[in-house]
Structure formats: C-alpha cells, structure tokens
Length: 196
Image (cartoon, rainbow, N blue to C red; front, side):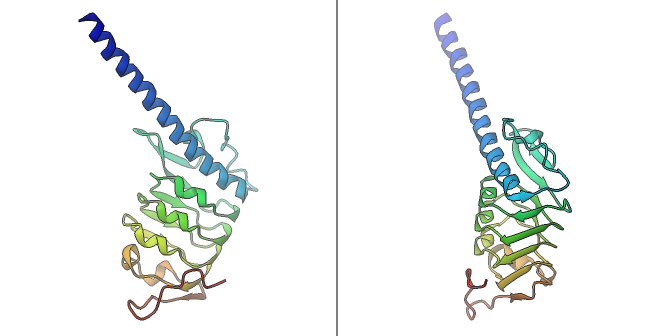
C-alpha cells in the first residue's frame, strides 16, 4: 500500500512539473513573439522598455495582460504609443490573444496574414496608422472577432464580406482611399495581395 501511494504521489508530482514546464514553454513562445514585435518597432517613448527577453514570463511586461489561470497573453495595449515600424507574423502565435490594440501609431507595411490564426481575437484596432496592402483573407476565419477598425490607413484591394466580415460596417474601413468594396459575393473575386 505504501509503495502504490508513493507512485501516485510521484506521478502527481511529475504531472505538476510537466504542466509547469509546458506553461514556461508557452510563455517563452509568447515572449519570443512579442519580442519579435519589439525588435521590429522604433520606440521613441520607451514604452516597451520592460519587454526583456531574458524574463521567462511576458505577463510581467507593461502593456501586456495575461489570463491569470493559464498565464497566456490575452491583451496587447499599445495604442497611441508613438511606435513606428512593421507588424510581425510572429504575433499569430499568441493563441489566446483577445485584444490587439495598436491604433494611432506610425505602423507601416502589410497586415500579416498570420493574425488570421488568432482564433480568440475579439477586438482588432489598427486605425490611424500607415498600413498598406490588402486585408488578409485569413481574417474571415476569426469567428470571435466583434470589433474591427482598420480605418485611416493606406490599405488597398477589396473589403471581404465572408465570415467575420459580415458583421462590420463601412466605418471599420473608412479613409483607405485604395480600398474598394465590399466584395460582391459571387461576382468579384477577393483580391489576394494584388495591390501594392
């Protein structure tokens, strides 16, 4: 009886260690993704100063919010932070991200298609930047997305209407002079990367 109790205790102990190790790996992957963003941005106000890649847990970084139960990044608040540079595809690795707030900065370049992998995303605010290219068709798969604002950029192509896009009004897209739409279901093919 004592031997079997020890085995149960040992196996619970091993499971706990395994869980903690996996949590640390997830945190490291998320930290790596966020640090990739930091490296791609110019930060004149030092709002990303606390984003230290040597820390195991990005949940201690300023402007990052995590789910306390699972220690996963759920929110990134960098609106009006005077950041410039490009968004990075690594952001698509933040699987639990619900809020991505990067409005009123000077971000340039395309919106990474990998953001379409953020299945938990509820709000995406990218308005008042200088983003270019088309709206990734992968965004149609974001079934939890309730708020989208990509207005006041330099996006081009057509506005998709399938999937999550059926919920959004024209206000989400205004002041993108090269953006056309909405896409006419069955009549106009979605423009995938055809605009420059």
